Image 1 (spheres, helix red, strand yellow):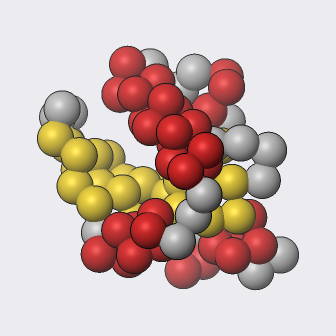
Image 2: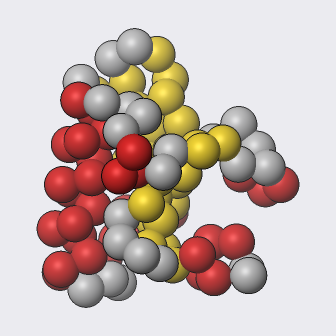
Length: 87
Protein backbone atom coordinates (compact mmCIF):
# COMPACT_ATOMS: atom_id res chain seq x y z
CA UNK A 1 0.00 0.00 0.00
CA UNK A 2 1.32 3.43 -0.96
CA UNK A 3 0.68 6.18 1.61
CA UNK A 4 1.09 9.73 0.30
CA UNK A 5 1.31 12.49 2.91
CA UNK A 6 0.28 16.00 1.89
CA UNK A 7 2.68 18.74 3.01
CA UNK A 8 -0.11 20.11 5.22
CA UNK A 9 -0.41 16.71 6.91
CA UNK A 10 3.35 16.54 7.46
CA UNK A 11 3.44 20.04 8.95
CA UNK A 12 0.51 19.26 11.28
CA UNK A 13 2.00 15.91 12.33
CA UNK A 14 5.27 17.58 13.37
CA UNK A 15 3.37 19.67 15.93
CA UNK A 16 1.43 16.94 17.72
CA UNK A 17 2.32 14.82 20.73
CA UNK A 18 4.21 11.57 20.17
CA UNK A 19 1.41 9.49 21.74
CA UNK A 20 -1.07 10.83 19.18
CA UNK A 21 1.36 9.94 16.38
CA UNK A 22 1.63 6.38 17.71
CA UNK A 23 -2.19 6.11 17.79
CA UNK A 24 -2.41 7.54 14.28
CA UNK A 25 0.02 4.94 12.92
CA UNK A 26 -1.99 2.16 14.60
CA UNK A 27 -5.25 3.48 13.11
CA UNK A 28 -3.62 3.95 9.71
CA UNK A 29 -2.50 0.32 9.82
CA UNK A 30 -6.08 -0.70 10.66
CA UNK A 31 -7.36 1.50 7.82
CA UNK A 32 -5.11 -0.32 5.35
CA UNK A 33 -6.27 -3.74 6.61
CA UNK A 34 -9.98 -2.98 7.09
CA UNK A 35 -11.08 0.44 5.85
CA UNK A 36 -14.49 0.38 7.50
CA UNK A 37 -13.62 -1.20 10.86
CA UNK A 38 -16.04 0.14 13.53
CA UNK A 39 -13.18 1.61 15.63
CA UNK A 40 -12.34 4.00 12.82
CA UNK A 41 -15.80 5.58 12.56
CA UNK A 42 -14.94 6.11 8.89
CA UNK A 43 -17.24 8.66 7.26
CA UNK A 44 -17.33 11.02 4.29
CA UNK A 45 -16.89 14.76 4.72
CA UNK A 46 -18.48 17.86 3.26
CA UNK A 47 -17.46 21.49 2.99
CA UNK A 48 -13.79 22.23 2.48
CA UNK A 49 -13.02 18.50 2.79
CA UNK A 50 -15.65 17.39 0.26
CA UNK A 51 -14.45 14.18 -1.41
CA UNK A 52 -12.36 13.21 1.62
CA UNK A 53 -13.09 10.81 4.46
CA UNK A 54 -12.31 11.03 8.18
CA UNK A 55 -11.31 8.39 10.70
CA UNK A 56 -11.00 8.59 14.48
CA UNK A 57 -7.54 8.41 15.98
CA UNK A 58 -8.62 9.04 19.59
CA UNK A 59 -11.72 10.56 21.13
CA UNK A 60 -11.10 14.02 19.66
CA UNK A 61 -8.31 13.49 17.10
CA UNK A 62 -9.11 12.87 13.43
CA UNK A 63 -7.23 11.93 10.28
CA UNK A 64 -8.54 13.18 6.93
CA UNK A 65 -7.72 11.09 3.87
CA UNK A 66 -8.76 10.15 0.36
CA UNK A 67 -8.36 6.75 -1.28
CA UNK A 68 -6.80 7.39 -4.68
CA UNK A 69 -7.08 3.80 -5.91
CA UNK A 70 -7.02 0.27 -4.51
CA UNK A 71 -3.34 0.63 -3.57
CA UNK A 72 -2.95 4.32 -2.68
CA UNK A 73 -4.13 6.46 0.25
CA UNK A 74 -3.60 10.24 0.35
CA UNK A 75 -3.36 11.71 3.87
CA UNK A 76 -4.59 15.31 3.82
CA UNK A 77 -4.79 16.49 7.45
CA UNK A 78 -4.53 15.46 11.10
CA UNK A 79 -5.81 17.33 14.14
CA UNK A 80 -8.52 17.69 16.71
CA UNK A 81 -12.10 17.97 15.58
CA UNK A 82 -12.02 21.72 16.33
CA UNK A 83 -8.71 22.30 14.52
CA UNK A 84 -9.96 20.59 11.36
CA UNK A 85 -13.62 21.54 11.24
CA UNK A 86 -13.85 24.58 13.50
CA UNK A 87 -16.57 23.17 15.73
